[in-house]
Structure formats: structure tokens, C-alpha cells
Length: 379
Image 1 (cartoon, one colour):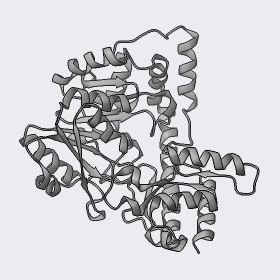
Image 2: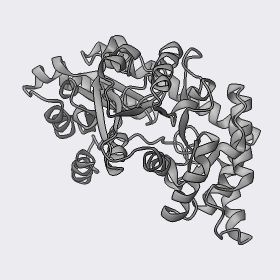
Image 3: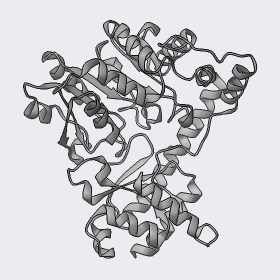
């Protein structure tokens, strides 16, 4: 966020120049909600469907999500286990409040999305970040989990595909992790908000395929391009539904009603066709931009199989610019190339000072401009 504020200040200064600021630091699709979704929101307002729903969300939307799991992943996920939430952030908060007690340890990979560990801390738990390597796809491994599981360990919080790396956990590794956790009476929580933006069939499966004890967090923000609508969902075991319902009633009352009615249109064939075209465009951006980074010495150790990020080792580029951290490197790119990126220290402490995260959620033309500027600066 601090980098974003600095980028906005510089952007105002250079907005009329030949090199306006290019924002590759924000994990937000440049696409917005497609026509059917916008029209559904307008109808909800025009017809007065703006009053509270039940805390679990509209039954019709829960059914649509259930049907999406069946059609997209071949999974039978009953609507009764689906809880519609005020964004994935609310789902993560509800999951942590329901499952984490004071002093409980939740294990997760380093690097990982910073808010995930903060949700654990807010529930008075202790997030334990375990360094992960490129060989592990920057994900938690079963071997590392066995090494660090202790008396206070309560479970794991994973993300597949991950922010900041765009990498997913191999299904065999995920099965081993979940089996280990289950044997110790722990919980497996998986952030799957980028699952719809998977580009490799090996990884593009939901953790819900393992069993009905997995807790999956999802969102309408990324694949469905509804970031500001603040709508997500979670899938929980049957026994957890009433617990989450009571928490949601007290904390949120219900998710945005207009957003819920709009989201019903996400699953229309016309909308899905558009989302799939956009997914292909995100993949095309990845396929162009990451080789461009590699050519200029910004190494991406693991090719992302999903999402819209590039987790790049900037060690060599830092030396060229005379800086010794990715934080300073990010500010040099902003000042000298007018390209905003996210420094690695947001995402953990394990070698993250040598990494930056590029977002490829911007249009191809902007990515090409950014690559040209970076190449000129780092040559």
C-alpha cells in the first residue's frame, strides 16, 4: 500500500509526460463485470431487491455456485455447505474466528499473501511461515510440514494458485499435506480465489476433491472480475455451517445484496464464455511478459500456472542499479522508469528481499511498454 501511495504521487507528477506511470503492482484485473452482471445489478436496484438476505447468502446464488463446481470441476458440493461472504477477506476472517483459538499455530508458506497471516493474528492465533523454495513451487510441502508441526499446531492455510507467485500445489503434495493434518486432528484451509484462472490442467482442480473436511475460500473478484463488489464464498464441512452463520450474522449481517443478485448472472453461458476469453488473454499476457523479464535478467524461477503474477528474482538487476533490497529496487523503478511493482518483503522474510512481484493483470500494450522501459533501464 505504501508503494502504491508513492506510485500515485509520482503518477500525478508525470501524467502529462511521455512516460506516464504504469501500475504493475496491483492485483486487480483490468476487466470489469461483463454486461449481464451489470444488467442484473441494475434490475435489482430498479425492482427494490436491496434488503437483507440471510447471513449465508441467497439460496439461489449458493445453488448456482454448487452447479459451477459440478460443471467446472466435476465435484458434488452441496449448496448447504456454501456460505456467501462479503469478499474472500470476510470468508478468511470467518474461517479463522471459527477455527483458531488463542495461541494456535497456523502453518503457511513463505512467501504468501500478507493478509492471510494477519487474519490468523486477528483471531489471536500465531501464523508460522515456513520458507519455501522454487523446487517446492514456493508452496508448503508435506516434508516441511512434518518437520515443523508441533504441540500448538492447529492446521495449515494454503493458497493455490498463490499470490505472489502464481504457482499451485501439486495435487499429490496437497493430498499428502491434508492427510498429515487430518491425522493430527487439524484443519486444512485453502485460498482458491485464483483457481478459475488456472492455465494447466495438472493444477486446475479444487482442494474440495480431497474430502468434505477441506475449507475452501473463493471470490468473485479475480476470475469473475468483480473486485469492488466485495463478494466471495467459502465451502465448509456441514458441522461448521451453523458456527460460521452465527459469526456472519454478528459481524456482517449479510453480503451486499445487489452484488449477490448481480453474481447470479456470472454463471450464464454468455458470461462464462466471456470469462474464458479473458482467461485466455491473461495466459497470453503471462506467456509474453515472463520471457521478456527473463531476457533482461529478472529471473522467474517457477513459471506461474495460474493467477496473474510474476515472482521475479531481481538480485542481478539490484546490483546494476546499486541497491541492496527489492524495496529500494521498486522505488528506483518508479522514479526512473515510471513502472510500479510490489517489493517482496510484503510477502514474508525468506529471501523475499531479493524478489519483486509483477502483476500481469494490465493490458498487453501496457506490459509491452513496461518491458521496454525496464529493458532500457537495466541494459
